[in-house]
Length: 136
Image (cartoon, rainbow, N blue to C red):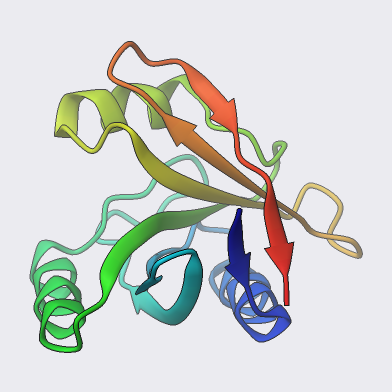
């Protein structure tokens, strides 16, 4: 079971709130089952309905993670007015980009006073599987 600190959960929620009403995005990296690093990435198409990670920043994150011996574990992004579940667009983008059998984290601000954070894996067929995680 993947493990993530409360600090990283809180940072994703804070990032979501800062970019609201637009979606935010970023990358979680770590070693083994443990998330150890959170990278904020600019949404190059600011919108309340979608995100596209800035390619230059995404490449910089990948290089930094590689230099540190970290594995990319999850892409995260917020939903400002819908549940913390991948939308049809999220699934299509994952499949079309080739980032399948990979982790995704959704932060929902649908209830601004009580954000929801959920973890998933999207496979090559577009199936979405919830993933259990432990907050440590």
